[in-house]
Length: 337
Image (cartoon, rainbow, N blue to C red; front, side, top):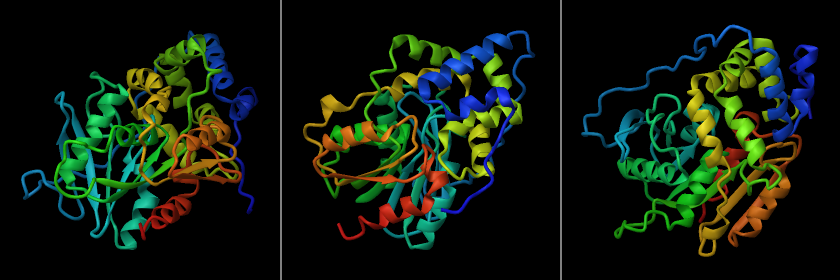
């Protein structure tokens, strides 16, 4: 494995870069308390390119276009459709947006596939930040995107929260009210998602929720050196600075209340709904993932009879940034199904 320059930070933040989730959140809380008199949040650092253009088909997707899909509660979901051919659907994770899939989408489109990706509610250019953020609502949003884009027989790829949304959707039967034609999704790749960690109890969850909406935490992450150190635990070996910076920008662009309330959704336990799960599935996890740890991913795989698992040595939680080529290969592995 080639060696890249490791991202480093000020000494007080170095321990944070190696901490598992509960300890990391506790350290954030400590830094926050010490910095309580610091200035309030700086402005958002990330800007979003406007991908929208008018659709001549009344909202139906054509190759290489963007559209806006209406959710059940009136929220709008920003969707990008690229390429032609067999469909692939990409779902990003918590405090991210569809741009996390740029490298994956480019490779899939070049390979002759049609790629559908969207900003989940409260993220990127989608709205809905003040509405329902339950897993049930996220599943309904996904179904509306599938309907609006006419997807049938797709390989769907989720990352982190996107994987949990996809899993909940498939466990519920993949749009059981669609009576004609093949199911929208025929295979799934679940990256960086496992069963919830029972060690993260109510107290740790409450601290995490508070930290995610704290103006002082916002201020700290907006400082490049400290912010990069706080984002560092999400990545594995050979971190690339541009990827960690992109994650920091997406975190700051996600409303604090959305970050806070979605933590409850990340703790979603799919176990009760998996008895009839039938979708061929590949689970990907980095050996250094501190959030969806490999042991919890293996436990999830054991509950999915048609599933297999690949542990990617030295990698962390941000697999779309760290190993886009492995995700592309995972999609192609389902080509003959």
